[in-house]
Image 1 (cartoon, rainbow, N blue to C red):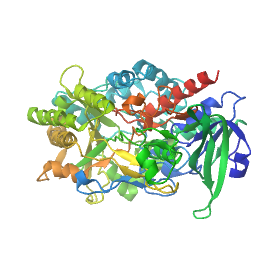
Image 2 (image 1 turned 120 degrees about the horizontal axis):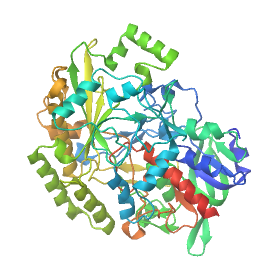
Image 3 (image 1 turned 90 degrees about the horizontal axis):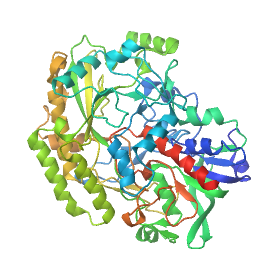
Image 4 (image 1 turned 60 degrees about the vertical axis):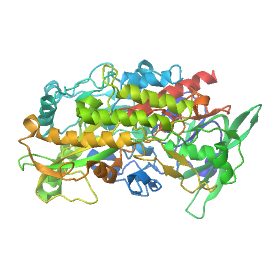
Length: 601
């Protein structure tokens, strides 16, 4: 069915209401509407923009960030352990959600990380199950055999063959790609051609959500909305901002009966209520799903009472356990004979590359950065550095009082320990060019490469809570970045590792010198605090954990204390993963859809 007006939307009585037409929400809507007897309604605050080059062209990644037409533009509260900085957080305010804004990376965590979901009290959530849904959500596209072998970019089974999201490898590689692999080899770190098979450690050529041939973004809109938009039982309203889940009582449980939302120009919004016969599914993301719960009276008593909202379900985990990946950028100038993305600033080369893209879907505009490594602590930290990180983590154990927090911290310690159970703690993202920086500018005509050192398992934990009963106000987001000293020590060690990497093996002859990083900083830990930025992977604020461990949803993603309210998005992930989380969100949503269907039988 075409996108409808709010007036036409609310005359329906839906079986299911999905709040948020983003990465997860469109998956759930598409799968539930496979049954023609079921009526599904989707509320999306943003608009449908199928022809926006800044979304569709891979080489334009990042251009939508900060654009209020597509980005909610969240800002954290001042981060006291990061010298008072306010940190910007983009989230997708457009059909497709953050799958329309992200940098298109598709990756998976390790077997141990997905098995931890089950260990933490969620039967049926494990690596084997995730693998099934990874395959269901994707179609993997192979490069020509010779190219695949040259760049370590082979499709290894199991891989999806007919899923909605395209997973492909770049149509353009920088000539620094192969020397980089050689540098890792010189440091004793192997190429991993199967990072999706349960062990992601090593240097790898990562795949991206790009449709080969035309080389455009593959995301929840192209995969899960457009092919099914003609279904009469799938109804979408855009420009609709949910303000509250309407609740009644069913015995001791809260029963979700619908969703209140507003529509119209700012300051002239009209209020509406949509009804749901069976279930309401929140897929509003890590900041806005807990916000909607709290606006509806579900959450911590003191948070709700402080803004005058009556408590419907007291649930202490709502808005807690916020975790996020962060990265620290470093940049190196390379010799001028290398082809890097900096060349796109030169009109003649830019015109040539754009013609390649428009004509054949090839060249620089057809690709994003593609070389990523995932490293356990002892692979990148010197012995004394690793000892400091582990000692800091031990000391932080005293900061946790609840049983749930202690369980999560125990997993971090296990994954940080040396030996066969060690998990990747740092990701080093290679960007073949000068990575955009607000304070440093490249010299025109010069060539660069950047390395982003990212933290995979933050010990720092934060919160996201409402501070007003006004549904249109933004929540107070406090990730408490760098509040755990182990995070600072680990990132400092990763930044120092990049210095060694830049000089190793064949990379040494490519590099002229450091433009920004550990060598040009007096205090590396202060450099970390002043330079880090989010990777934009916030999770955890509606964690899937037992209720006694401050969980918000059960293993069927149902909110504790409710009969029919579920959450399906990144907020349910209880502990962070060593990967870019887009593939994981698709898999969670695919599994959630099957859970909901089975419940309805």
